[in-house]
Structures are given as C-alpha cells and as structure tokens.
Amino acid sequence: MLAILKFFVIILCVVLIFSALCGVVVFISDIKRFKLDTQMSLPRQKLIERYVDQQELEKGGDNNVV
Image: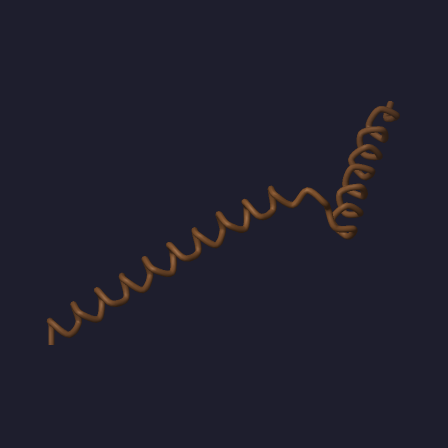
C-alpha cells in the first residue's frame, strides 16, 4: 500500500514539474514574440495613447490644486 502511495506521489511531482517547465517555456516565448512585435496593433496603440493622455491629465490636474 505504501509503495502505491509513493508511486502516486512521484507521478504527481513529475506531472507538476513538467507542466511548470512547459508554462515557463511558453511564457518566455510569448515575451520574446511580444518584444519582436514592432508594428503595434490598433487596439494596443489606442490603449497606450489613452493611458498616456490619462496620465497627462492627472499630472496637469495636480498642478492646479492650491
């Protein structure tokens, strides 16, 4: 009975390690693909422009406070 439990735990550990390694590989490849993307898509570009505009408004609004 104890041997079956040890075997089950070892299998679970192997599956966990394998899935963690696959996740890391996919994450790194996704980051590399994102960095290589020189042409920004229109939704991403609009989102960045809105964020920059919002930051400028917040920055400008703080200067007017007395």
